Image (cartoon, rainbow, N blue to C red; front, side, top):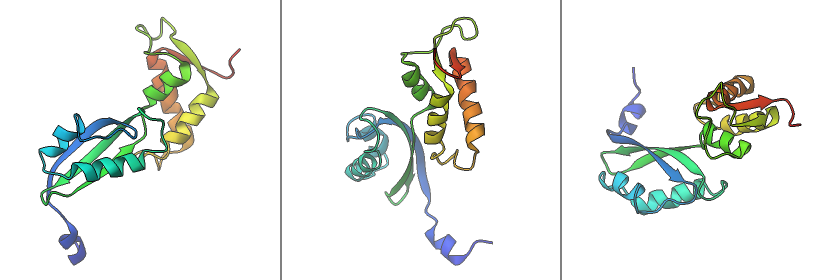
Length: 155
């Protein structure tokens, strides 16, 4: 049974929206403006808060944001670090993965790259309880599906 405090603090949710927003680049223009404006949320408050939270990343790094809009025109949001595929493409120095993974190798990355990506992804809300080893295995699987070969050391 819920406590009185939980009942009083529960707010009715109007919507939940996911947006790709560049780090430090939230502006009241599209895609942020139309997505939040329809729920009458304070765009400038979101932009300032988002830009402050993402200032440690390089500008234009694609961040995934999940925004929960409440009926009283307030909001909460969580910011996830860039996708594993984005990190792998940057580490491998390529624009896109292989068109035929398993047949054509797009590039190679080292286990050190995989480990560094795993350490960054471990701070994500969905990965914080996963072991570093299991995150690394997941990243290696993603690299394989992109046609990126994972090697111990670069020759």
